[in-house]
Image (cartoon, rainbow, N blue to C red):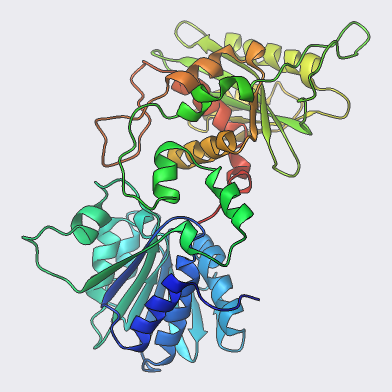
Amino acid sequence: MRIGYTKKQAALLRLFAQGKLHRYTILSGSVRSGKTWISLVIWAFWVATRPKDGVYMMCGKTIEALDRNCLRPLQALVGRRNFIYNAKAKRGTLFGRTVYFEGCNDVRAENKIRGLTLFGAYCDELTLFTEDFFAQLLARLSAPGAKLIATTNPDTPMHWLYKNYINRPKTAQPIDLGVYTFLLDDNTTLDPEYVEEIKKDYEGVFYQRMILGLWVVAEGAIYRVYSDRREKCSVHLAPLDADGNEIRDDGCADYDYIQLGLDFGGNGSAHSITATGLKYDYSKITVLASRRLPAKDTNPIQLYEWVEGFVRYVRETYCRGSRTIRALYADSAEQTLKNGIKDRLDFPVKDSLKREIVDRIRTTTALMSSGRFFINLADCETLDAALQTAVWNEKKLGHDERLDNGTSDIDSLDSFEYSFEKDLKKYARSVA
């Protein structure tokens, strides 16, 4: 049970109690800073004082994310009697007021809220919204006294939210907007040791955004933390001898099962496959082996045989004791090639999920920063080189994008990420 407020939370709550809350209120800042919790407190108090016949809305990137981040905590905060909801039906009742839920994960989302007259709206992780959806949402807040409360982590300063609203041009029509920054160190309800552990999860641009609460551009080397700590990430996993015994193992062969990731290349790139050792408790990952095969002049049969050869090698070298290959996650853009491989292997071959690349990068760098990423350098030459050469695309400063112009090995990064992205959120220890 949480007791009391931090100074930053109490100050915002006083503004609300004094009727000084802006028409649009945005809580921006670092992870675990307490911004979501106090935003839900104020949202609940505010809805409880508004007309019962009004319509209210809570929005997130997806309904599932909104449920996880906000709806469940809100119900725990005010009690089941005061907040009854059905996420699948996309509606609930908060203190007798009707609240609709909406996701904005595609371009069609804006059409879902057209025609509504809203008395209030709540937005979770606002930087993940499209600008069209947000603009339409503001237009729907047409009831007298309507307000918006939103939370977000910082992004690039070229993001539409920062450029057009938070740092609104002086020549633009003024709006009643208040922005409040919450930092991790502001959250005095957290154990100091836990705070230090969270800080270890971030490096570079993600540290600046998620810990320092800054709106900064992603530029330069993506995995600088890897280059700086490469030797600390390195493990030695020797092959088995003729009797099946490990010749040498420095104690870092700490994985419970293996998953493979496979990226299909085009004429200008290469096929890539990676074997990653994973833990049931998601505590760490160990990249065991990675390979590349030029795609040009390679026919499907040659590709299938190459994959089969890699599988045999991984089984002979890394399937020690009860460890087995659980599944292969293949590039979902090439279903014909994937199905051809599926017919030849005796374990599941599934589609890669292709989660947002920036989320994959953030999780990988968090694993590296917190000492939970290991790589068998002797057998991962391709991935090792890819991690050291990957850079941000400087021409896309308004969007975090990995440069893909042939100067770095994106194929190896993709295959590695496919091997564990199914459990991306479980490996990402810290949440906003």
